[in-house]
Length: 497
Image (cartoon, rainbow, N blue to C red; front, side, top):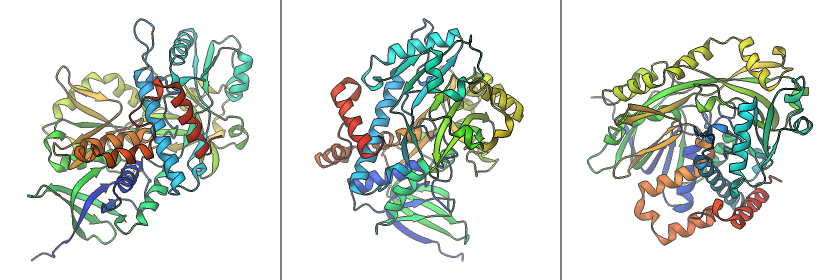
């Protein structure tokens, strides 16, 4: 007879030690402190994959500068609905983080969030006209009040001296600027939240734990089979609710659950690299996040940006990211991840999405083939005086874009995040990427509403939610006074002034 596996029971299992599990675990604990939770992470530390500072954009995505959130229509007008939604969601995140600071859960907010201006910069008459239209459209909305626009070279030299030095004086260039932009180190934030949870008697963090299988029990609960990567021992955890927040691996684990809602979903992995500035003199000349327009065929996470970051308390300067293709679903994953994700239920959507996105495939192959000089040429569009010896290659994280069934095309590639849950709400997974981390609080609150609908309707739940996020249920974009008050308060608490 084989050795009997250890079996434990908890209320909630959170798979993945990243920002999503950290956020969901914190929300659950605040809303119901008695809930028993186990957090499972396959690496030896939390926040080492998509939440790590070097693996994500860290922008505090709030649609202030990301041009891919405001596409141009055929008639020249600009679509802003997605930008408004993302800006609202980031304000929700800031309110929740402020609540945690006031409560003492987070003691040093300046370690994970800093004020860094968000800018958009474009080159050439066509894109200058687009940016001006975007500016005029967005500044009619409360969430984008305070945005500045200029084509004046003297002002641009004040805003972005590093980008203006050595540039052709006759080149058409324009930029927008929002002073209230932020840089967020989601790795530090994740560590703060999970460390706080791990101190509680009813919450356990388990590292070096790989989930091998997820099966539904006869009573409706879930059996999660886990292997300890240090000892090799396997055990089983019985849980009432399971959340799969394992980054790129979420799709593979969701497929193991066998829920019908998972059928038809596929994943398209996109890797990336940064150019990291090694010259302190250059780093100190740039103090903003400047986003440009993506190349034709490029995925949204490959929008070029010259990016001031604060990592380990030190200012850094990155350019990129440069996209690439790998069959891995995680930076520390397996080359067999993509093949393992292909099932009878999703092969048609995946093939259809692949055929519809041949330009993307071609773009990624071209990116992979680029040598350091090619990468420098892309940087020189932003910084004409750039020299290769001042920059080094830094490998970024892996992203897995969602492929889902579509009645018209058979399958479509989705750029964004999506929550997939069982009909009874007992298991849920987060698929996709950007703007994920920045909007994690709003995403996880919606997940709780979807998976625990009766509890979410209770007066106690709603009262606590409004305590954590005072504007919940209201539109900041529709209320100028509330928008200004909320930003003033959160920026004071988070020490963003």
